Image 1: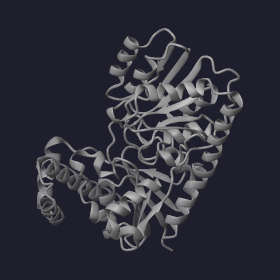
Image 2 (image 1 turned 30 degrees about the vertical axis):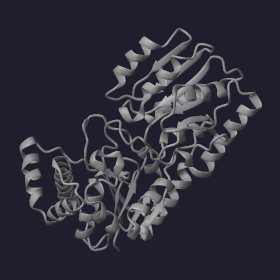
Image 3 (image 1 turned 45 degrees about the horizontal axis):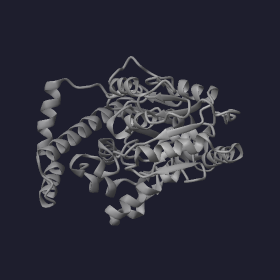
Image 4 (image 1 turned 90 degrees about the vertical axis):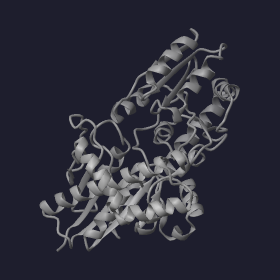
Length: 413
């Protein structure tokens, strides 16, 4: 009898700090005989997280040297799929040095990953007739790799998730993601993590509506945190990479203008702008604002912080999002949210129910007004926000429910 095998093509999990949300999904995989995770872009092979699933084997793809990488990059110019895409770019007046470079990198890395994973599978007893689901965690080159693998194994299917940067073309330079139509038309199912993402794809690519579904991410139930009796000092928490799209500096801008209340602001997350934001906070924030920039934590450490700290509100002011896992984690503990109404955020933050939605281009005063609203809100009203936050999480973002439904569906393909 042929085995049922799940092959996950992803970026770095279980290595590095990235894709922490995959930790919530992996324990629920019980529908397959074997699970093979193939991270394609690992930076630090020495930093590995524990996997709580005995079915899982990890095959991390090694990084090629510069000369080999350059050779494969040049070689990718001559693939038919590359030539066809170049002609399409020219037709759409999008062909330039940047889009050409993106395309060549996309095809090169996708082909290289495909060949390595195929060789590994055949070498380790996987037959070309086995029932295999190739599941790409990102609708980027990972999804292209999945399609190439699907074509090499007779009884296989390919599915992909899409989140934010890998979904919304306008979030990318020149509004371009390579091989979009090829990937969308050949995946057995495309799973968007948000209704907004599904609507976007159906609008931009109306001919592929039949295979786009919504499958939300989720977080584990760590229990609800009881609200503090006094919101003084008022405890704000935020969690994201410190990069330009997350606009963490705009939190500093607003806090620097608040003089009438004591605030403790905690931020979890690291990134290229971390030191800049830290210095900016040191320069701008007065004594009534205590701040803690904690850098990156493991997902387990982060949950422990939420479980033991009486955070009063969570803030996310990104200029672009899918549906942030960071907000899922916050509302699971009953923490209300202030967030920008971008991407699928309004599918998790319901204005005046479990939080406050801000315009994408909000002013400092609008953020200050939202902070003050929660800081001075009557306790019975505040507790309703907290109850609503937890209830919305239970209904829509419970990892056990969401991932079990998703995995059951793809196992039946």
